[in-house]
Length: 483
Image (cartoon, rainbow, N blue to C red; front, side):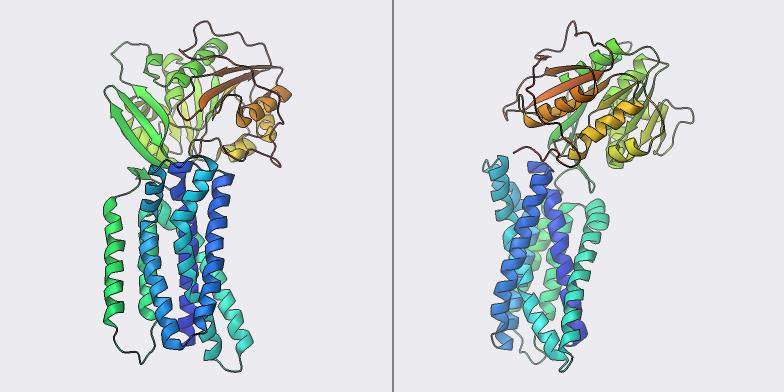
């Protein structure tokens, strides 16, 4: 094999490995969320697979060349099958009831470790052949081998994050990894090798499996690099589900009904009751996390002089809401401006497609209140739950700050954010909703410079709660995710 071909194969297989790794972290989100723990597990398991595959491949590379090439081809054929089936394996393992950190770790090992091992098995053989291809230039050859591996990793990361996951979704990305592995397997043969009908049959079978993996369909109805979204209608209620977590819902209303009656999720009713009680007739409210735009819609529908700024990191969320949630979509069409198509010139709803922390750091505007309801796969992003974030909020918000969290009763996340708020605001109230079968509940916080009166008739199941003292999260030592 030519030296250039060997270098190209090393580069491509390294790109496949990194694309697979990033896609693994994305496809894990609908099952176990996105947090420091999940990404740590994916990176550790995939790198462990790379290490084992390299060691195993080194032993196979010492065998006679035809035998070593045959082993490398078989490894890539199995890589193609296992990569394409990784989302299915993950779903099957999750269906067995694995939950929590231990369940997540086991799921990652079962779904992603085997393919991570096999995709790396050919690399030592390719490196050996590359060094042997240029006698007397072993040093530069080895340097190019290492550079090709690094370059491939860079390309794989860019392709996954900026191209395949946002444009075609995770299932197609895994299938693409499998298809590329099969192409590389077809190139791994000695020039004088006889036709191997068994190898051809194996490759054809693997190709059928890769193609069939696409027939299972996408993981969700709408997918971007950030969200996996479904829209569910049950009777008069439309729900927005992101990464298997219900993010928002609205109810169809009869003409003339109170707009607040469209709020379906009880935690949004609690937040709206607080806002309706605490704010005046013309507040300017900042919403970090657009979600289903249900609270901005209610605010603008009930207060004609109010304005809202909704910061949503994923433009796909806004697009889906606009097309599939009738009330919120109509409000965006009528009052939306900013980072949307067909903006209203004098709209009262400014939509900003940006990371919430970046917006807070860069904005020069001031607001009368803020609502923090941002989630990444069922959990608050760690960088939005820090002392520095809320200190910045206090600096740009004149009035109350409202926070929605999902945590266990008196859990680490709720206690850490509560500690932040009590450190920078003199008045803080906390409430908790019903506990789900998974042991989680909406925990709602309201913080202000001035006293906050209790709610006369909070939603059913919601009441005041006392949270234990805890360490306030910071950018340096923050929230790591549910364990």
